Length: 118
Image 1 (cartoon, rainbow, N blue to C red):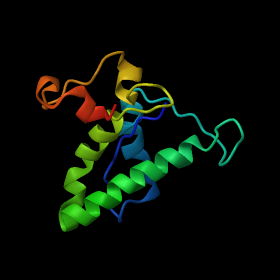
Image 2: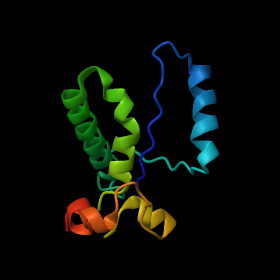
Image 3: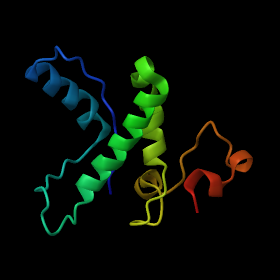
Image 4: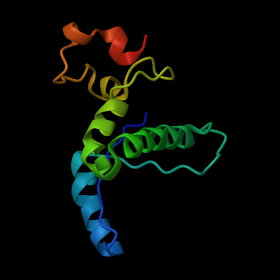
């Protein structure tokens, strides 16, 4: 299962700054890192598809929000982590936590069909 977490970084970050930020933010979340080789037969291109989906979401934000796209990273993260994935028949958030995400959008107002596209 692939969950997305975005960490805005400055171009001026040194490798040491980036490593410290990664340890503080990602490892602090309890993240377990599993490495895979690109196009390894057992991964079936899962990482590549996930990255492509995230790139498409980011590209759409750059087009729609122009100079302020980075302000919307939390929304992109939320959207991806709560999107229905046919490979697991649920959203990544639900697979990880065993429940749907509580969001500011009322499920009763929008409806599950609209949010997850079923």
